[in-house]
Length: 203
Image (cartoon, rainbow, N blue to C red; front, side):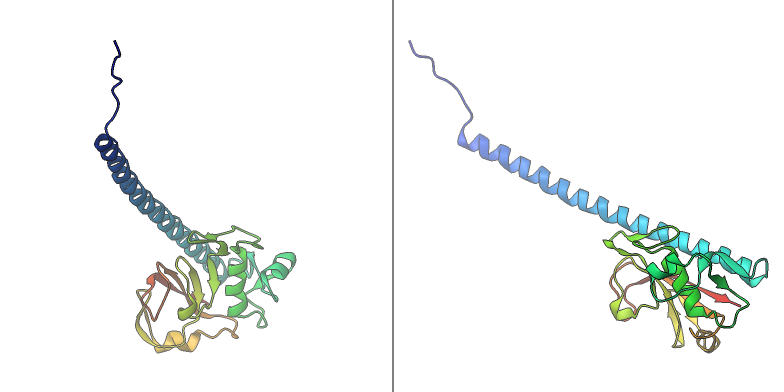
């Protein structure tokens, strides 16, 4: 006498496949949300680190605790060249050392490839540096930290009011001046991508 072998029917198999598909879909969406929030947390943590680093340097230089920065090198022609220049630190008493060189020196300190300090890669584009100098807003990418000169009076730029006095002091070719450190949570178009910013002055 033959015994019938029982198996899954086609309907049962389809139901199982459908359930697996739903679970996989939910998992993928959840994972995507998790990775996006992780990137955002890393990017903002890096922004806060850059702001603290700059605040420390400004405290030391602006109050004449030191005249030469112990951390920031005077920018030369590129971050690779700046990193090789071990003896030329940014000198706040030297009129030939400019605000642009100070900010570009900070950019190189955090450069992802040739940084001589902490290397910050953009979490949204791991092959690129997160800290950039005076990036035009149209070219700003998601997750970037821009060390920007301010050239236009604005009611708010990255949450910071910009006055005419700020614009007058924000000149890259001068020894000191006003600048803004700003983080973008999306690619900028106009000011749509701005998230947070901090205005500072090198005296």
